[in-house]
Length: 190
Image 1 (cartoon, one colour):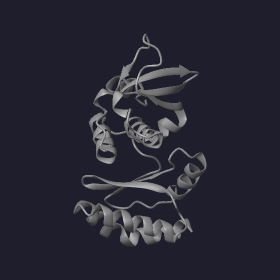
Image 2 (cartoon, rainbow, N blue to C red; image 1 turned 180 degrees about the vertical axis):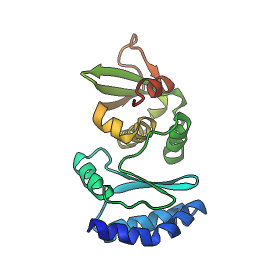
Image 3 (tube, one colour; image 1 turned 90 degrees about the vertical axis):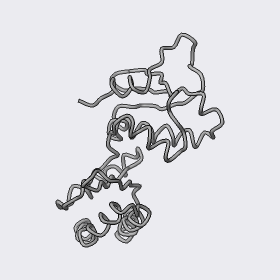
Image 4 (cartoon, helix red, strand yellow; image 1 turned 135 degrees about the vertical axis):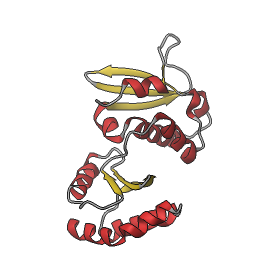
């Protein structure tokens, strides 16, 4: 099934790449989703442009079982000119991660700060921002996960972040908060 999927993907890869480069992202997304579904794959994914290439990032959304399935599928992908194919969301530049969250959620993360606790190499992060006060818990959860997956990279989040929380005020007045820039710099994967 894996080889058949990639065979069929290669047949339409140039057309989908053209769609992305022409700004027809919805059409490109629908075509990739249809192809995945036809072959029995129901993974979340992102399709973006990293000129001159198109990037397909299959994402397990933090699920280790889905991660294994994605790893197995992508392990067999052939080289496809003009494509970068990843098994997780990739770490982005800080400004790009912020812009992505603004585009998806309409939320400017400018005032976001973080409580950062490290226990045996795994971090517990708490996003602290007054801007989340009116958001539902579901939106806050999605927003936090999206921000961190793009800011730090999904693989890093899955392997080094044990918990993600959010609140409008620090847990204690003397709690040291880390800016998004500092978080980005401190948790850089080496």
